[in-house]
Image (tube, rainbow, N blue to C red):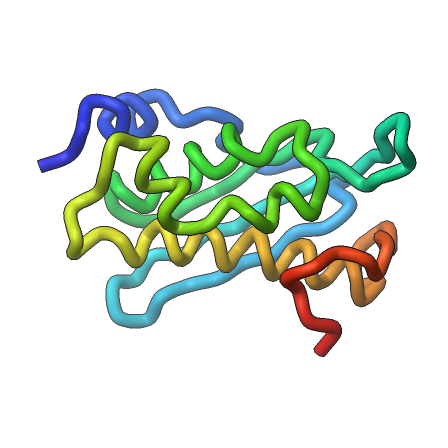
Length: 141
């Protein structure tokens, strides 16, 4: 069964919806389960000159776990530098939610992939902004 926190994020998703004029957006899907996740990011620079997630929104078509994991991801990365955001992995998302059934762990992987894809697009200059190339964990190709 789902934890209370998973159900809370499913029933009351944080940062859900389409973002107007994002710096970048990325979409991923899983053909086996049918989940589709779209992430929107607005990026800014902090006082140290590092790129950080100023705003994040999502749209998810999927099960309760898919919606909850994407909602949790937005809470975990908002305000973080891109390097810190890349450190939020499937384990961190599942832990934040109080655990996920093993059959639903793929949802946390998919939400992580959506974020990584968006950041990769920024690095490659495929968004409205291009960010520093010094972000570990995202390849250039």
